[in-house]
Amino acid sequence: MLVQLESVSDKPLIELNRDPSHPRGRANLTVIGLGVMSEDGYEDAPFLRAVNISHFPVRRCKKKFSNPSWVDRKSMLCAKSRDKDR
Image (cartoon, rainbow, N blue to C red):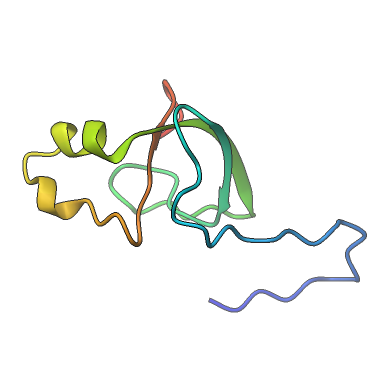
């Protein structure tokens, strides 16, 4: 997907975290994106969205999955927040 702005943005640039040792513990995170808006995947977000969620350790995340090998420490992080994945 290619997105074109209607005009120049006055919002500050953000820097992406590339340090795999962060976040640590139960850090609060803000996630932004253009994902799907429904569990069935048929409703796309019409605009950039943001949600605040809480990070939790990979070892705890692996316990939540039926197949812990799905959790890739190099490319994923584990986070959740009540009623924020809907």
